Amino acid sequence: MNIYVGNLPYSVTDDDLREAFSQYGSVDTVNLITDKFSGQSKGFGFVEMGNNAEADAAIKALNGTDFKGRNITVNQAKPKGDRPSRGGAPRRW
Image (tube, rainbow, N blue to C red; front, side):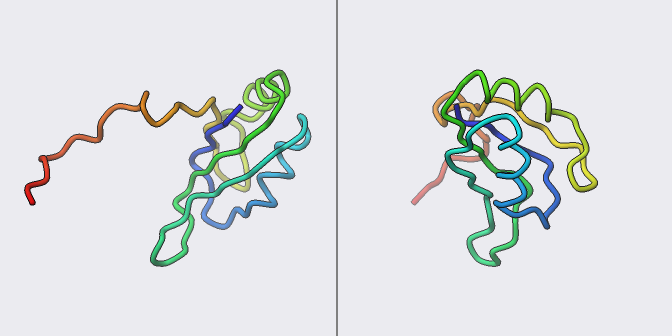
């Protein structure tokens, strides 16, 4: 299951997330989202766990908890197609 983790402190590393989630089961991948120009964290990321029961346990245990000074949001990630449009004017090339 792909898990969204939001409201992360900018100082959090992949290893920090892996350590937190591995308490609930096997972590396949961790992907912190960073700005492509500065490399600075954007304050959210994704954790992939192969076992859905372990992923559900991690979500229930970690959602809304303090993680390095911030209350994080943890829930099942939505596929790109299921997210609402960000709006804005259409591009005119």
